[in-house]
Image (tube, rainbow, N blue to C red):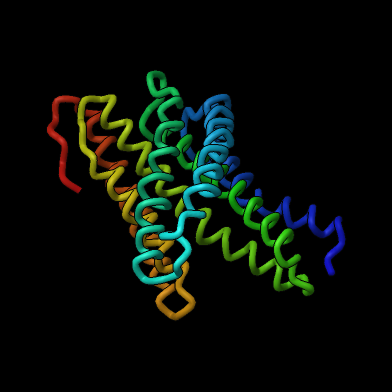
Length: 236
């Protein structure tokens, strides 16, 4: 059985994506201010609370506990997609935009998603310890966290980016709902396939790739608005 020190080490591992993303974005995104980054992380921590509250009460309803095809689909699209992304977008609205470029704002949104994904991994790990205990072998526990780093954390990151780009478009009078719609659908699709115990779960990776590509597409659109405010929005 893993001792208490190993538990703390695994909890620390959950924050590696956040630490790496924080340093990388500060290095590669010009004019990114550290206080905006920290504020985005704080907002994300606050967003974990209502998300966890909704998850605890909403997912206890009978429709979410039948483990049928319809139950999994409703849970993925309604909760993981619509409700969770709406909560995240509400908190993202408090990230300042006025003195930021679209690139620096998107970086803050990515950090928001990385923070939320990292804390969700902590919650997932603690819940596992409470229910069945940690795996007896170190590689098994490490692989569990590593898998979440490259799946759940990434979908949170790119969906936060899409929701943030929707807010950017809205505040710059280009009211296009498609970035947020993509965030809801892709997050829901990811969770639907990730919950599968069959080979179909690999389709969740496709959802992550699509979310990343959509972030790039809408970021480029927003850049064109930023450089040429009079240009009409382009369809993604």
